[in-house]
Image (tube, rainbow, N blue to C red):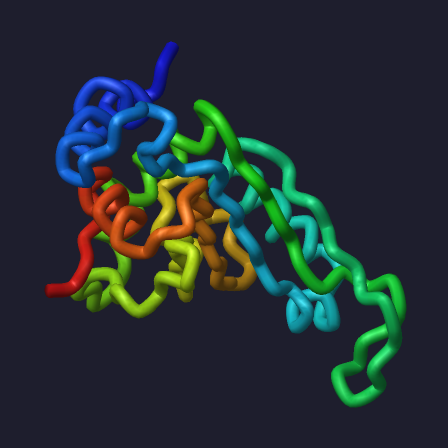
Length: 181
């Protein structure tokens, strides 16, 4: 089954962007290449190794695929970090799973963020990619409160194929991202 936002992109957004920016070819229209979720779990890993498993389980529920566990490359005594300890989780989503996650992020998770006043326009980098920091992973309805041991944040990076900030901003607005005025 084709995700709702993917179908919307093909039928509405892409033709509209071609007209808005005067693009002649459909391949010149900006599109989302991938969405990456990153979680830093260094503090959780020092306290308890089971916390790493819980965080992995939560990110698997949120993204729909198992995350890669990043391990430390060297020991740092000041941070109580040993070589080979898990310090982060990362998931890269593409295709249908990416569009399904984007739909849940915009329509379900962001409205549940406490004191949410819209996304900042300053989070675009020079190439038009966008980053969102979420302080609590509890905004996603897939996470069950009963199995909660520790609250952790996550970073969502949306990578676009075009190296243009204005086109990237217009694309995300058409997907329904609630930017601040």
